[in-house]
Length: 208
Image: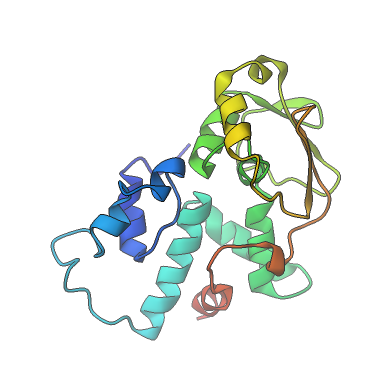
């Protein structure tokens, strides 16, 4: 399975803002975006003003990095979004939000989407009672996500859930902490997605 294995802090610096890819570290003074407020690389300090195409490309790259998706898969999601009824950009974000790893993160089981992907691959979660190891599965309304029994006793999950206790669970999800279980109630609407993305720029890029 192809995935980015480089330093994720470089991705935040490239976009010029925090993408919260490293969980707790992003909220401390160790965050590289705060210490080096310029793009990585030899010419990062003297970055030029972006063209219209550059703005569209950066918005697409930002969305890919938020959700940990590579180019081919992202293009596939855009194709799915364009075939659905409604606004293509909002459909695209709803599809990305419905990824299994994203929902595990949104429910508070992990501190980042990257951690969610890793723990899903290790088989710690079940979808509708069946063990899942593929983080890109698209969850549907009515589906139930459960932390498997072998994970309920691990300190990692207890600590994560405790740290995320004050985190607001999106209204399109339901979570029962006592059962270590969540349920997808509906697809996410645009107002439920708190990421600073301008999805219309992504649509414009793919429409060229």
